[in-house]
Image (cartoon, rainbow, N blue to C red; front, side, top):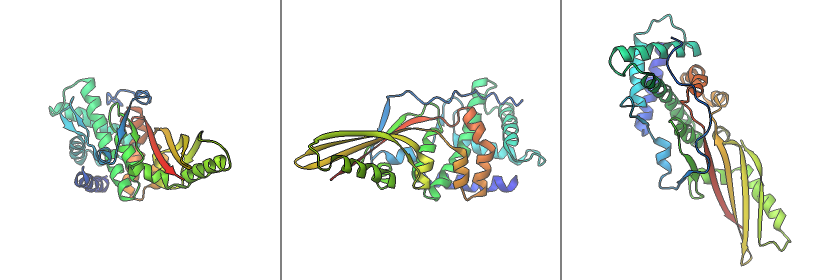
Length: 282
């Protein structure tokens, strides 16, 4: 356990440099995404913010990273006989919330116990975000990071963003473009829309970030030239097993083993809707 704590602390420093009873009293989360139809438009200028945001918890007056630092201090004095695993994580969080109450860090309320529990779990997943970035899974890390808050906004990436450019260069997007070209070649169309579903999994990053998505490809012909706009739409829904398969650091795999299922059950990881728009001409 000591080695895990030390390694996790080292990774946490990287995160900061880059920016950025079973009765824990954590409320069960319904798993529903945020309000459909309301999106925050992401441009090249605002893209970095959503890659590095650190959440401040007003109800307990601390950032997620601060909650994790307190949790690691608590674990240093926890009985060495406690083993790692999901049961360990739940038991440790239970003990930590009680410790936080007794030390006057939080008030003894259901709301504050739940808030500090979620803050710790989310900070653990910030380490996974950092690990994903190190491995080059930048889109997946960005979308996971944004899910680590209550009521994350839906995100809409315009065609000039790196997220859109990544999809534009994928084999799946190329297939959609080629199919559209085939459909309009030799016709009198001046406007056409194709729609369907696709699985973005030609790279590990795309698989972790999106996987199954809907798309709508609308082309408009003007002066003999087609402008094709493809909008990919999906719900970000964290897949713990896929992340475990992609991680190479044992400390990060341990975090996923210990906290993934619990994080989703208490709403530490919240699904939300994502659209990415790609544009090309031919």
